[in-house]
Length: 155
Image (cartoon, rainbow, N blue to C red; front, side, top):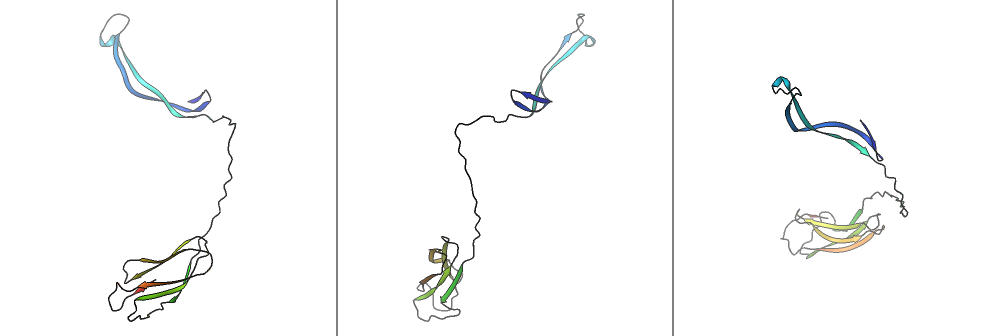
């Protein structure tokens, strides 16, 4: 059924709930047997559905915002290593020099140069904020914690 009251509009349906009260009463002729009684049942009934009321309020003061979204695609960074070179040996060196440049065109991106030896713990060698131009670095990886022999360095 349609509903329209006090600005609220919508559609409601009648639903029946629990039996609230039930009893038998005698017919007006005074006899009280099953053929001459009336059963009275009170059942809880309610309406359910969706109604709404539009917001018609007016506001004296309000703020208006313009939002602009600027999508920026992240470009890949470029790493150029001058040292060490592939398959380089270091003999009795105490440190491995690491030199090169790193480039990220996305200004203010946080750049980290990391390394691992023999697929062990990853260590951070160098961290810098991107400037949009090549950034040179010269760092060293200490060898004091490694045994003699061949090791694999990944930068």
